[in-house]
Amino acid sequence: MALTATIDPLVQGSGGSVGIALIELGRSSPLVWSYNGSEVFTAASTYKLAALMMEAQNIASGATDPYGVVCYQDADYESGWFDDYADGTCYTRNELARRAGLYSDNTAGHMLVRDVGGADALNAWVASVGGRDSVFFTDNTTSASDLAALWAAEAKGTLGGAAAQAWLYPMLTGTVTEAGIPAGVQGRSAVVHKTGTIDQVENDAALVTAGPNGAYVLVVMTDGLGGDAGWQLIASVASDTWSFEAARA
Picture 1: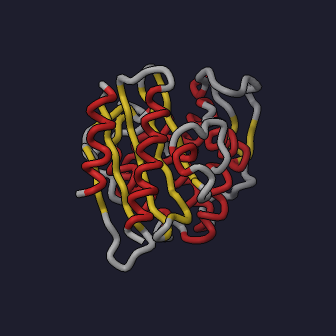
Picture 2: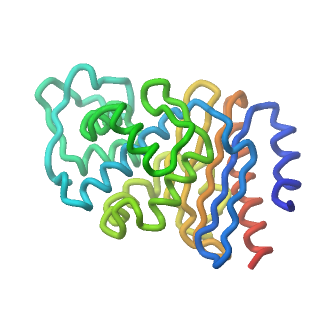
């Protein structure tokens, strides 16, 4: 396949481990493709994507109120973007989602997981919507194919439909980390995405809303590259994927 032939030299030359998944959404016969798609990687902050999607579905169904509050507990704390957490401080779900999505704040992510019922509830929900390899938040592992399946379900409207999307997508657009898939797309489409980074892990799980053939999901997970090399590889994969989609138009 042409995309495999393009991507393989990038991966082989990177010196790291890479998993990629692509799901087209806008074609009558959509392509589902992966490169090491089922390989398990450290999820890093992509667990927040699953928590945000579950929260969005709950809000869309009326099970929870976006203006309802979740109050901080000491066990929620992890160093991150914000440092205003204190005993008894409460935050709306809107604010926690903004912090966890746009800024990838760790304490906000912990509070969202607790709000949706904890790690067991989150992982059961992920499995129910097509995740096969993921143990989010605890072991905190996942695969490119699992994250792509979550995004495809969200984009197709099966996780709360337009109401869930209207709440979720602004929390994942124009984030503080745009060096991966958005950089590769180069402003040709809005990119709704969640990154994850820790140690030598860089991940990006994205919905490209207006590709050459319509929307598509692209997930790139990397390990062992370090520095900016992971983001550069992710951007290169995103650029090559756009070119591949354009050639199929």
